[in-house]
Amino acid sequence: MKYSKLHTFGDSFTMGSGLRGDAVEPFYPYQAKYTDHIWATILGKKLNLEVNNTGVGGVSNEDILFSLNCGMQFLGKNPLIIVGLTAPTRLSMKFNKPNDHWGGLTLVPHLYEKYMESGSDFLGEFRNFFTKEELDSFVAYYGALFPKHSNANWNYYAYLCIQLQNYFTNIGTRFIIWDYTLWT
Image (cartoon, rainbow, N blue to C red; front, side, top):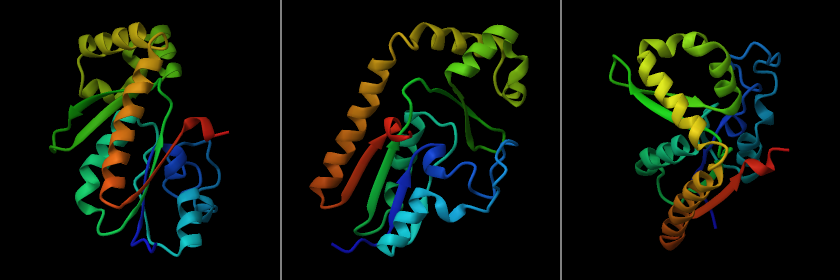
């Protein structure tokens, strides 16, 4: 079957964090030197397909599936869709930026621990979008939910992704799911 385009959805592993020239993390010394080593780029070249890589560093599974949902209208005819689910211990809180764009804060275990040690001060720019009470409530919710209930969270998003896979398969579209356990 000939695909029209490769669409990838996922976190920093899909995005190619550290390999792209737009990496903001100071500990990624490569800049754009290894852009052609991103798995989506390699697969696109191997299949001779244009690649639409929508991976974003640090996102939750909720964000990944939201991105897919928003992008469904732009997939075109006969796309190849690959979704990489991230670690289940990521939880997002959304906010509306002043310019009417959505933004978000994703908590992961190391940010939770840092928040517990130093409070909201280290969150910098997010304090412009959330009150201290909102941040404290979000962190408390995260602390009560993870990792004790991370399996329930994982099962929920995996189930949603499988339902999307069923939908796309039923309309004749190739939809592949992989997850964070393949990172290593």
